[in-house]
Length: 446
Image (cartoon, rainbow, N blue to C red; front, side, top):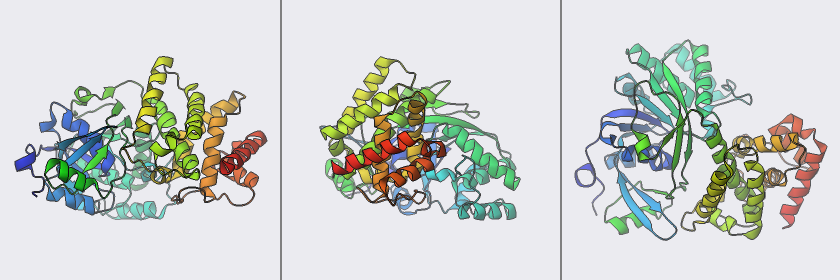
């Protein structure tokens, strides 16, 4: 069986005018897919870099950057070869990273580096206490072209290399689940620039992204081979739904993504909150409470009447604070239920549960604060926090979170600790602490 190749399966590689950091499945199912479907795709090739790994870059390079996107509906699969990836590099190839930045053609840099990739401290700025950040600071101060590891340092090194080469500004587009992700990126890169003396010109675009893309499964390649007759070492599986909402300037141009379905707005905040609170917050609820009840996937958890009722309660609280038209929110929630229930998308609760210390504060805390400020005890938000507490105490899927608070001791004490981690003021709210402790006991008993 022959592997994918441009000669047999795709168009010629487009000139590299986009760079991407975070070469994973979501990027290939989302930003690369939108670029593939833009009418000017033949002018906008992407050079993508992994975080630190080498395997996926090697597999993609061996098949000319091509890969199969499997769009997995409730009843059947659709197969499409994506050609927008013109080059794939391992994250450690810093020379190639800087080489692309020095060229005049790149105009857009996209990021999918997860919430942890921004190296932020609790206050939102750059965490200069992290060993990796300290090492990158020392490296850039000694040599602006020295290899660096963190995403802020890689971006700053690229911007500085572009400036030295006489290149113009680019648009940096964050595609991670963080409120105001464009402003977040600008802040950490700007603070690093201030500490190193390096500079570069860029606009920072805020974006809301949405497409459920499960972690790759071993059988994906065999499924693609059986259906298409082609060997693909790097297929991606995703749901049919996709959404991309962007806000910001593109000083050197961009693909015509709007003709592929992307939306450009003057304020992304309402869409960002809708997705973070309803989809991502719902995922966190199911990941922690559902896994305590023995479920392993989103589809299993949402089929559980208890989990489904808990999800509806959380959504009712969150929608009170979204400021979007009621019919639009009702339609979005109905679509989410269909998406979550898709039994052929194996979205594991263990993967969603990872790094809760970075996810719960942005997915749940704003609603919890708003409800308490209004004088209400929000059972839905309380339940998410209580389920996370149980997860931290060993309930459900294993903990994979290097910044997680401890939740040992009596459940009431653990509730104060977890709430204090989220917001010290919440730990002083005795009624809230008691509610979290009671809800944790109820979930554990059920």
